Image (cartoon, rainbow, N blue to C red; front, side, top):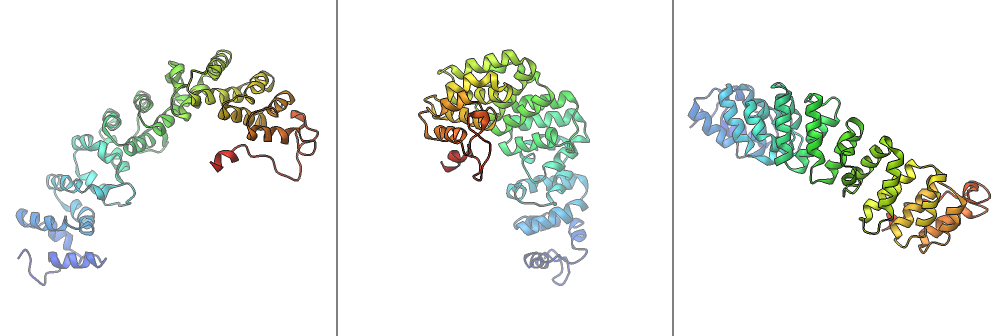
Length: 349
């Protein structure tokens, strides 16, 4: 037997208490931590078989082990990946990260960066300096899951109180890596950071970014382009919009960018044409801009001739003498009935 039957640190008694949702007797963790090496290994092997026992091992025994033994046990604990899923909140997994040397943490960063111990990972690596944080983060972007990559971007770049402090060149390296990410959500986040902090990243190849498959990337790229050179950006957006060879999502973003940055007088010819466009998405986007931002009678009248019922409905409301907008050719603004919600047709699909 490993311990006497009536000893409060007896492994069977420990397991019985853990299974019942109770804490083991005081001193049990200290006793197990200081067992002879072979006997302790047998006890830990038994504890590793059950999730509740592993949690107790991480929280109570691991911090009591000498550094070398703790690192070896932490390696063992990392093989139970289900304990580290981010949906499972568990403070004890932080003890595993704290027990591992920095070199091991860099190697395991692609896994740990997407775990419930991600914050502690970057806190530990920060103690080794910004270069270590940057190198580990770039490794996450090369090898980690989408969850790991997105979490890393949030903690190291987006969170002003994040655990890893990076100088400008380190942040830039991470944003560039995120802009090349295959995941649209991650690219969108990175593009918005770039638009705020380093627009040159997007301006260096605007034509690429305004055609990206991620709508947030396209929006950020157009924002940079219009801020840098509004006249050229308007020309580029219009050229992209009218080209039937361009992808539809890119054309829609170009239209919305024109609607956001041009005056009503400037965009009126565009809206007048596109509310009657045979592609329903483009016509509805133009009608949405007409309804929300650029009410003009010429475009409203054109919308009444659209091949799409949703667009004609917007025109009818704008031109109705009881409900319409004077800016769009109606007689008065507002009525008992609330305005038309342009996005209703999309919600219904």
